[in-house]
Image 1: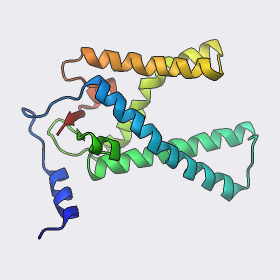
Image 2: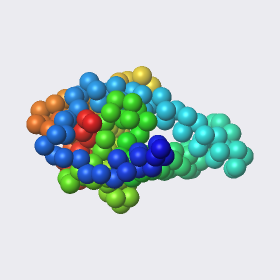
Image 3: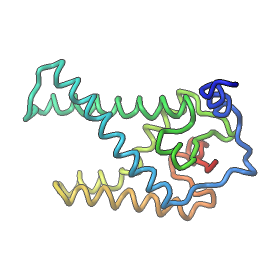
Length: 178
């Protein structure tokens, strides 16, 4: 009997046919993003706890410490996504809903393209971040601005025939349903 891990690795490396690949809907993407946020809580907790423990920092953090924490969290979250995308083309939430990230040829992304995709994916929040920066709003209003930005970018993807987001259009990558 074949090893399940070997089967999964072979399936992940096999190119996906462009003719059979179906694009995910916006609501499905939103569900995956919600599940992803729950998992990222753990990633952020471990990375933040490790940094604060190693440095001996405590709250309230000084501005330089806060920037350092944000950089560490950005890198930790990026490492999680890049590792999952390069290894199998999917994170656990994507696997749960049978979504896969592939390039134009239906293959897994290279590490460099996965890193670039992670950085470009932050464009989903760009309008909200600009609104927060320009207006100086904080608290719940800033969270609502970020949420509105995300929903607006998802709505734009609904207009695109393959239902792809801006960063996937730029890179030539796509999220497909298996």
